[in-house]
Amino acid sequence: MLNLSFAGAVLALVVLPQWFVGRARAGAFALLSVVAVADLWKVPVWRILAATLAVWAVGRALPLLAPRPRAWVLGTSIAAVVAALVAAKAGAAPATTLATQASVLGLSYFALKFIQHLMDAAAGRTNAVGAPAFVGTIFFLPTYPAGPIERTGDLARELAAPVPSWSERALGLERIMLGLGKRVLLAAPLLAFADPVFGNPGTAPRHTLLLAVYAFAVGLYLDFAAYSDLAIGTARLAGVRVRENFDRPYLQRDLGLLWQHWHMSLTSWLRDFIFVPVTRRVLRRTRRPLASQVAGQTATMLACGLWHGLAWNFVAWGAYHAVALSALSSWRAWRGPAPARTRLGDLLGTLATFHVFAFGLVLFACDLRRAGVLLGRLVTG
Image (cartoon, rainbow, N blue to C red; front, side):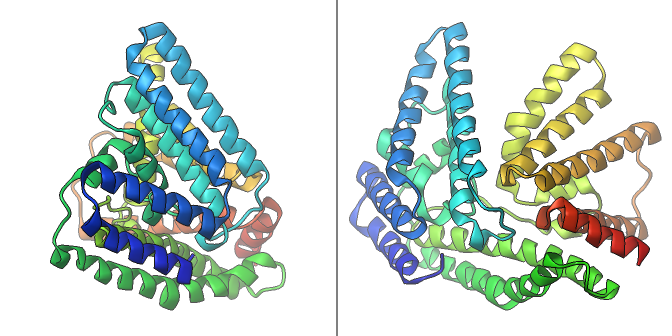
């Protein structure tokens, strides 16, 4: 990703706002982003572009339909998007870092944006988004490989807004340098240490396995956060503001809060389009708040696991977090009102939460056989 072609495309994005305004700016961003994505990641860009225009056309038609056919068209369209994503992921090799799976992750982000747009369109929230602006938001180069996941209506409004001053846009350079520092100086060495240990956990000493778990947990966070920094900084240089994606997740005192601060654009998407609908539906049927919350957490985390890859270890990783979050919700329901917070309690909660998340990442990084070997050796020695 970080090569001369990408740098050239970023430079063009920085210069473009000075030449184009209004709708022309959205069209210029769309054209450059489509060409850059096709060149940098070798994805089937023309098929994706055709799908993008089809989704936009369906989105324009949805508000005009009666409720029943609208629901049928919406459901069929979302099913088609999910089926296409499943087909793409089924043929992809598993990977543990963004650098080695940018193309597949990019396709995943396309799918999330398509589904979000269709649901917003059905609710009448995207009527003002034209075709050039929609293509520009879907293919927007800075956010393509790693997010943040912007709602198409929000990013379209950003593209139509007046171009910020150079002094404000130049602040993006600071964010880019921060991201490069995280990626090159911290994330890359940590992941380089953890990857061979995870690849052959049967031979490494126990203390090395434990260090690898910690290194992978910190390195993966820095890897994701670094790419988000690069995206946010590049977008700001181009005169576009996109949302923050990470907010000190490892300093949160429980697993629910950690997930609210981890890849926030993805978790907010999962909350809005999976957790809330599932929870509401189950609550209407059962009238049991805890059961509805557990059902929503389970559906959300299994979907999150499958979003990262169609493999049993990702299913297990999602199930692991579903169980952990459900246990936390059940304990809170049994406990009743929360006791007064203390510094020691927050510290112990933060340490416990980090370890729950970090050891769960073994399932994210390894297939089930290697994960079993690694975790078994950590427990038994």
